[in-house]
Image (cartoon, rainbow, N blue to C red; front, top):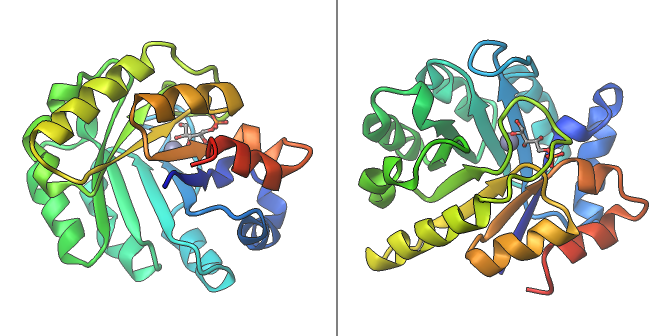
Length: 216
Ligand code: DX5
Ligand code: ZN
């Protein structure tokens, strides 16, 4: 089953509570929560207080994508704010193995994120400690960018690596996912698709969520 995780980075920031409630009507599976620090990426978004404010408005799992330096500084506060899953960039953390275990130890799903130029081998040593691996299909920092065409090749390599180890790790893809690129990702072995612009700017977001799931 493919999961669709709309990114609220593309929602109306002045009406976030309403946007969150609509995601269940659209049959989204997760809520993707993009945290940017203006340092690891050239943009700033929101943090644990926003997560805490939104938590009472939805039963959907909140998938926190940390695009920050020192991601370990934030896991306890996101846990307290009601996050269900935390992913962080391997490029931003020296103690990847330790941090994955800390996140899991708090009862959340844990995963690493790889930027487009970071090879799959950077995730391989920690795959047994990951519930998911997030592959960036754009350079992180902004919504509405174009899907990097080499991504499906990377998804395939990661899928092979996960299967060779007999693991059940999800592969999440983030950036430029639309009806066309969703198909490429799913065929390559992705199981969770993040979608910002394609869902929030769709005329019929519910139909778009269904389309992105590629009938699976
Ligand atoms: C990019 C973020 C993405 C982004 C996706 O830095 O991590 O989650 O919001 O937006 P779209 O789907 O519009 O590329
Ligand atoms: Zn993201």
